[in-house]
Length: 252
Image (cartoon, rainbow, N blue to C red; front, side, top):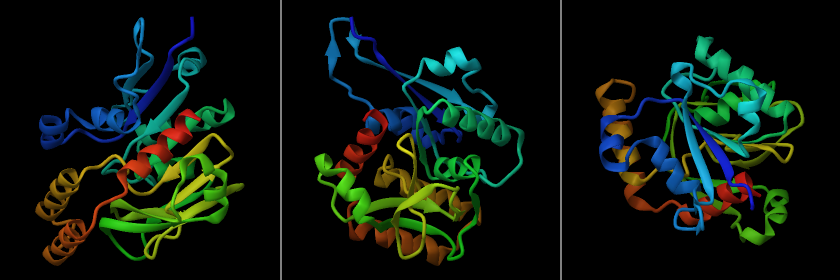
């Protein structure tokens, strides 16, 4: 009998009440992006998805538990990837171990930044400030040519909600996408690790909710919130293309 594939989502943020109520929490949001719901074998789902609250110091422990998983996903966070909080240091330690074991790892937003740091790169505040709303990113021709089966277009629209960025790539990593505001929108490290600065998993209502929270917390000004909402109204992210791209990497 074929073994079920197992994946772990390392949750680096608390679920806002809105996301819990409307979407079932960030774990469910990621499962909708990456899981193969509806495809069942005789024993039920052919995939198993587990979650760990990395923000609370909960991580898979020991080589045996880590070895169970075929891939890992690191979520976004309101925390800084360049901080020295204990949970951040513990996550970095795990990511170094996953790299040594050549485990598939997909990092999103904060996850993209912390993956960069764990591999020897540098992160920090974005030089051009917040990026909020829908942004167009440009993919490298080398990356596109390596993904012929996915028919990935040369540019993709993605939701963004960040003020930090990758400042310096890890040694041997390569930039595979960039935007007008952010030099490293995506990077790959070997064939087993990839970071994405944007949020392929987000829906527009989640981003609108986050913009309102940032405004209420005085982290952005009213004009920034208004500009971000206009960007959201003006165009749609390429969510189906992102779904194919992310699943193609994690499960390829």
